[in-house]
Image (cartoon, rainbow, N blue to C red; front, side, top):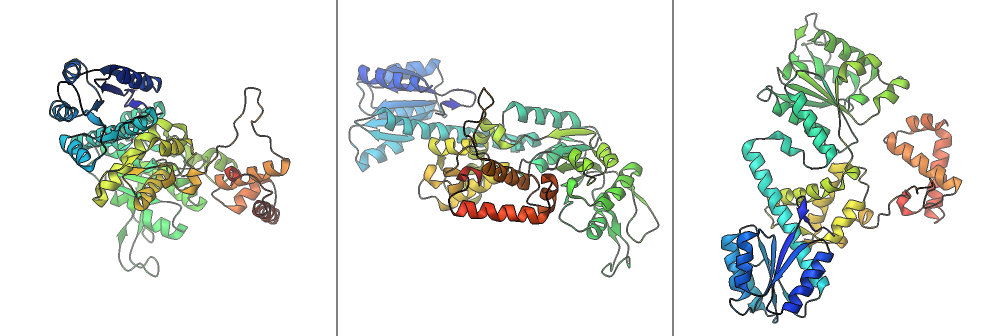
Length: 471
């Protein structure tokens, strides 16, 4: 149950002339962690609201002094943030239209069960959170505060943003680490935008996307005639970045021969374009990022230790999404607002059953995977509320991996074959499906690895493998 608006309990006021019904609803909502109160009249409600800000008012349409519709209309004028839910005994279209025109967020018909009311309240809570997030982002955009592009309020993210603020004004080299999709480039951009270099270029390159020769040309530049297609002189990214920031993404994928050249450039603060005898001084700050364990790469002689120490002056680790479920709620609502605004579509809300599934999922692709998931749901949606049924099957049917008990025993015991298959898949995930690296870590040759993968595929197809949670 998500009974929170921001970091505090969502507050509700129940208004119904039937005191027994009002008290029953109030107590039921309190049991579900809402801060609920009850009154019998519109006059009492307005008096209460003068003293207490309330998120949601649940009002019967027929009150003794003023109608519930009139109360909702007054709420709209007096407290822009408060949402009204109208309870009616007549479920006609005319009544619904009147309620919406009066400013009600939703209406429900008697007989009202607590379960039905709870669904309406959950929708209202989600709408409030989304509306407040939109307001916060508008303020951030108006103020030009780049730190607000890194969404979340968890201690882990707060530590990241604090480090960004501390390091932004220095020229120090920064190494941003974290799994794929966690937002490492956002961190690099925030460092740049908070610094005195903000008016200079921010230049980014993926070090693992280019072969060594082309990567060298991109970074250092070349002169005309240096190679077959070099028809004119070209500045490399170190020079193009000026006095701004050069972001080397996935530096852990950089070939060893390029690492040697990069180390020399960083030591001397000069670059030599391919085919040139002259060196060019550069003034850009370097921010590097990787999803690899560079210490392991050093041990395996895939990354130079001297380069590691040169770039790891200030490390910033971006935590995976699965370790901060509270941030996931904020991010999900932000992506809904962002995608709806971009497409010109009306805002939709995310039902609590869908949100619970999103929180339970382990998100190997992190924030990027969450954004893609939300975009898919919005593209295929059939209503203004996204439910569990709108989720991709991989998330809807996800079962968490077994956890360890206090005695150190897993809550689900596996056979040795199943344990081996799971470990192989984890190693493949760690190496991004690089069979050579995986075989080396496992201590077997590639042929043995392929045979085990074939056995795994056969076992899974025949139903003798592990559960879907392992796949």
